Amino acid sequence: MVSRPRALRALVAVAAAALALPALAACGGGDDDKNAVVVYNAQHEELIDAVAKAFTKKTGIEVKLRNGSDLELANQLVAEGKASPADVFLTENSPAMALVDSKDLFEPLDATTLDRIPAQYRPADGHWTGFAGRSTVLVYNKAMVKEADLPTSLLDLADPKWKGKVSFSPTGADFQAIVAGVLALKGEAATKAWLEGIKANGTTYKGNNVVLQSVNAGEVATGIIYHYYWYRDQEEAGDNSNDSALHFFGNADPGAFVSTSGAGVLENGKHGADAKKFVDYLTSKEGQQIIADSYALEYTLNPEVPLGRDVKPFGELQPPSVGISDLDSKKVVELMQDADLL
Image (cartoon, rainbow, N blue to C red; front, side):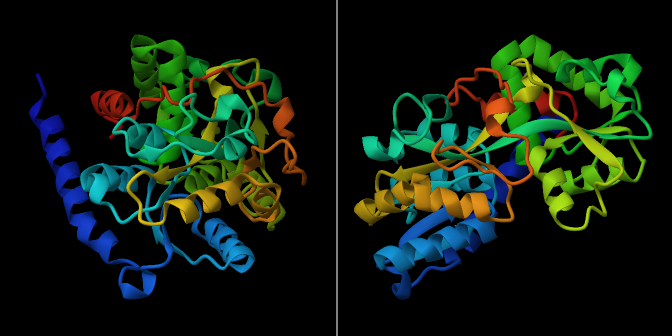
């Protein structure tokens, strides 16, 4: 039985999605776009804009970006169905890709595109592919936590000894993807217990950059984020990271989960051939080099183009084996609502 507060939240979410439809549909539409590849983009806007401009310069094919968040755009695609104007869907995290794929809305990609990306970062059905990765990390304040006292597992943060020492951003797609990884690896009961534990122990913020700032300022001892928030600040001035450090869990722990940014071509798009060329470019050496050279600092997934720079190498991460198409965003939302985190 659904509780009244939970039912109310569900109704609010549906209403919000319905209100978002005309706003997003109006963004970038019109006759001027009729020959362009329409991309529903939930990845970093600046990064994908750079990729799109380079693709257009190389091929002459125009690209129009309609930007939003992972689940916002995934839910819009599901609502629009085969009538969607979208040709391509790009996400920051893979649960949104799995949601759209579950509705049979993707066109299978060409083998030449898929073969550039290691098998663990694309679904077996070949309906979409990963093109960038984000490693889960624990950022910690160096004056508040000794390196020797850091947890062995992400799940340890639910232990009462971490009470008042943990922070995270539950409303973001990034954290929800991490929860999806825990769910896939440990099951529903263990994920429920972990969420209840870190809620009891933790402080919640809105946004991973705020988590990083709060840890660095000593407001809270540790925070669950992705790697690039810290590295990006280090490449700038270090104002929000110099008093903190990163802890990579490794050893196939749920805390070493690598979330995958995904790309897929919509089956009923009006520019299918050009859409496939765009996704192919995204996984090519040229497209991956744009990602590697960008401010984003996400890991490239084509092994021929390592990220480089002063970031822990992708090959040293020791992530767990998670079925990329098994990540259940719907169950994650239910569990987080039950834990009163959403």
